[in-house]
Figure 1 (cartoon, rainbow, N blue to C red):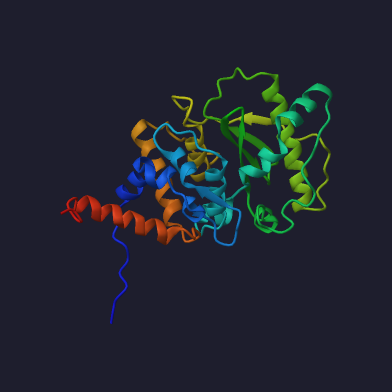
Figure 2 (tube, helix red, strand yellow):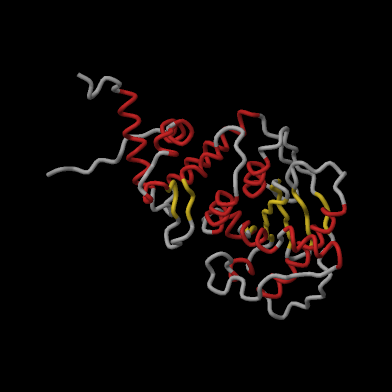
Amino acid sequence: MEVNKSPVYSSQEIWSMMVFDEEFIVKAEEEASKYYAKKKGHQNFFISRSEIRFLKPKGWIDDKIINWRCKEYNNSSLPRFLEEFYCVEARIMNMAITDKNLDTYQKDGTYIGMHPKLGEDGRYFDRKKAANRKWWLLPLCNKSHWFVYAFNLEKTELLVLDSMYDHSFDDLRKSLDIYVGKLIEDMLKIVFPTFDRKGLGFPSRYANVPKQLNTNDCGIYVIKFLEEWTEASELHACNNEELLKIRRRLVLDIALSNYNTKRDELLLKASTLTQRRNNPNRGKK
């Protein structure tokens, strides 16, 4: 009887495949092979092979990777995410806070709020989970810079976790902070129908968080904040080696996720790369 053996692979093969294998990344011709990750049960939730490459050193990561991690955290069995924190997918805030909406608000005070049906089907926003956590973590990308808003439901306090904050932000950032507070009021009204929404938002303050040393690691710091930040914590700044470790871990976590329908395909490819490197003369005459 033939025994099915699991593919032989290593973390280095998956990492190398993502970063260096041009055929794997950009020359895939079949539509089905263009994906690095597809979320089980979410037909339109995927990360392409070219998008996962943003996790290479000094790459600027996009919202698909942030959204994937948020969904993973919210489905995690870790006490942090079961009891304390709910991660609001970045797509929700980024769709609500467009440049046009923010510009209009700053000019004449016109506010375009959160859609009242947010989370009605539970795919992108789980009202029940959100209602039973102490904190909401809301990653947001503004002007190509990622940072996180942290909202305390018990104290109704809004903190900003920004790895590039230097006390010199302009009026547009102040307007953004107010706008986010108003959107959170909308979300509270959706999650708790009896909530008395006053339309004033919440005063914000900037938390003491480590600062990035370049312009491309903001998304990695957002991941660090989502995973480790607490109001009482003192996070340290990451050196290049630590940042690289986070990037590698994300590549592997997404590849090996039980929610990734492309998982077996990736492992088979990594196993092939391993065998090719271990037997460089195989197949040659």
